[in-house]
Amino acid sequence: MKLKTLVKQEWLEENNKDEKAPLPNRDNFLSSISTYEGYGKSIYRENKLKEIGEAVNRMVEDAEVFTMHETENWFDKVTVKRNMKSLKESNKTFQKTANEMHTLQQRLESVYEEIGNVLGRYYTTGQQDEAADELKKQLTK
Image (cartoon, rainbow, N blue to C red; front, top):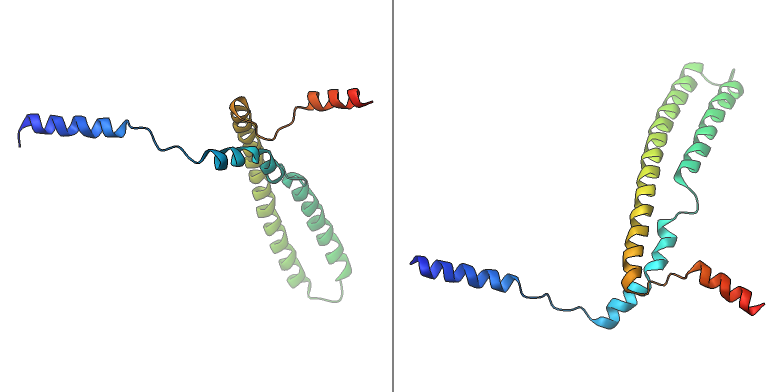
């Protein structure tokens, strides 16, 4: 094969790569963009993971105290202590995971807002301007 042929093939391949990608269906695209705000309900959880972790931690701590007190003479203390130790270890894992998820949740919320801001510059994402809503309320009074 000649060098001239190789160069020509390489040049044709590069030009083919530069061709524009086909456009998606406009109506479907705009419809999907308009639902962006709806994803916020899933992104921003009503019950924060950190708060749930703290509540579970209190439950585990209280359970240990009450269980040790209530089962003084009914069960083998060694078994109860072993179960409470296992409960504490599970709670530590739960707390660590909840804290990691809380951090990731905050990061997810931040990136979601960032994406929404950029999309909002070019398209209607279903976001409503709070100032515009307030103005409408004042005008209707």
